[in-house]
Length: 311
Image 1 (spheres, rainbow, N blue to C red):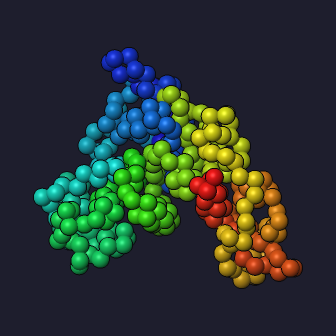
Image 2: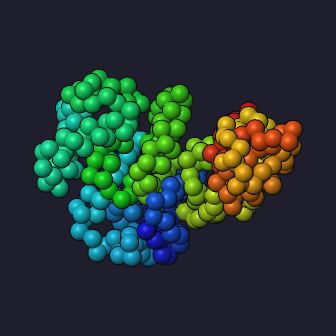
Image 3: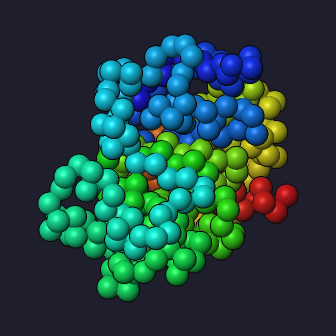
């Protein structure tokens, strides 16, 4: 879907922000770029839609160089969600969401229907919020509108540049949870920048760890937690837990449904759990000879993140 081939970015003052990176983002994947300040993650993101021109190498979308796309066509087909939201304050919510569909000359009935659909999708009642102005909404509600606006013209790719970092912890966690559920419905290719490892572990199907403009490791949350490639990744992820309380993360399921997936006991070690979840979406948990529930990847990541926060 999105392919970086020997991509680099050098600024006029000689700063080498990105140093010859190579990776591919799959269609429909939730891909997270993470690293400390100055690692090159935001520059990497912004090169995708040509907000920052690359210095060397090639970025391709659907096997076509981004330089070969008309700049307006490229950006209309890539949704973009920023940390500061950037809603137009003089416009109503419906007017903000309608911007790109109007530029693409959608007919008014289709735009109106899309606005209602998107407001419902992000958990805001259309009849309540369509006519409001951004200053009448909370920060979390404004960010939901930012997501809706990015999705308005149904683009295949969504870029998200630390979209939740300015929010309070409760709003942030709620939006993270909602984004996970939303992605299950929309199945977009999402490229998400964050400096928060817990956020990356919670959201990402794969995580790209960057340092000093270079890619240090790309892998699943389980891979980063269980097999960090370097000491930097190990330190950035945090102290690696060796045990979790499985019963804190299980979800109810009937035994018939659980009969076709691997099973573990509550005393199974974390390495074995992670190895199984690398191959399977979920695993059954047995206790006293019966299945008491299932454990899936998201539940384990939540448990590991909670344990890291405690430490």
